[in-house]
Image (cartoon, rainbow, N blue to C red):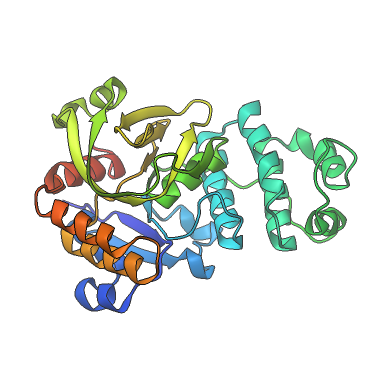
Length: 327
């Protein structure tokens, strides 16, 4: 049924000993949910700096980007690189030349903390439109658009004319799908020009019922998905404002943007369709041990989990259909 397709999981979380022993790591959790006979699945531990090489991306039919305990609105080097990676896909696959995307990239300049990252960002901007080159040189050398002082950018400006390959890459020509959950739902939104931050309502932990928008119902009409779906959630950050062109697919009482899509090949999910009740119990224990939540609250959450379950079958159907272009 898999048809020899190839998919990648960009793993943004560290596996605990329990998850390794019980599930073979979070990679094993996603493979259990999404993989079908005849498919190949690879893992890239992006939180440790391991990303797919440019020349191997075209070998994949799609990627799944996992959640993480890191803040999506933070400026960790790997998070900045993750944003750039998502934009790289956007530029190559969608050939998007809109000013909204170009302007969104200026925000990313502020979190470049490494010369290599600054050069990569500069290169992505160049891919958007080679005619931007003079403007970009001026930008990096501080001659246009006010910005904070950023030494890596200054160094990058001196490197671009002598050490960097500015060949515009050949666009991908394959049906590409990018599906992200939790933290990366927020990072993808941020990379495309949206806004993220701490959730106004605080932690959302447990099984949450989300309401599907008319856009989602229409997009997934062939699947006969119900208008409400319970899903496991474990987050305290959220997408506050969607990037231009993105559509809200679902919302809940606590979170206004539970799902969104950008075009027909990028989708973000705030919740965790891959989680089991056992995994969430384990995470609640870790959160209480580390002082993120009180013991009494953890006990209360576990008690509530005994009363309701996520619709795992519906989520599996939805995610596999999107990822494998069956809509």
